Image 1 (cartoon, rainbow, N blue to C red):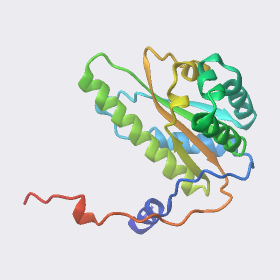
Image 2 (cartoon, one colour):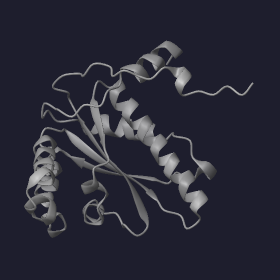
Image 3 (cartoon, helix red, strand yellow):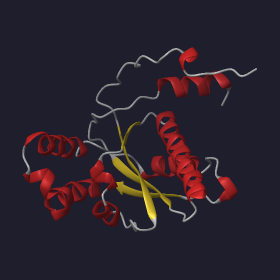
Length: 192
């Protein structure tokens, strides 16, 4: 990829929360996951883990959120929390696939922080790889995806793995416009 193509991919990737419901092929997911694993990683630990939920599994995940006791306070509490959960569950049914991203926790806080950062870099690779295939995505860090019960649903151990969230993947109903960005000068300090 030449520099202009890379810049174009970075500048045109968008967070999308409304999907058509069309499936996403396993081949597209495998290609994106393969590129995700090329993220930088200290000591080549490659601490990331991807739990892929293909479209048929998304309905099972939605049903899990509707019945698991861990989420009863959100479901049954009424008000804003219940409405937000219901909106999320409705939107979920339009995705073509979901990928929960986690990293293997480390006892040493410095190493754990490095591994968390490496896994986040893998997420960025994943998002760009999906975009390059014409797919849209949404990196959800909603508390329901960070909950220990959800991690166990994904086959993860909440005592040894940290959650980075869940990537929603599919075909966008519409591409949102580019959001405004702060001027570069507000985010960079040149030290000479």
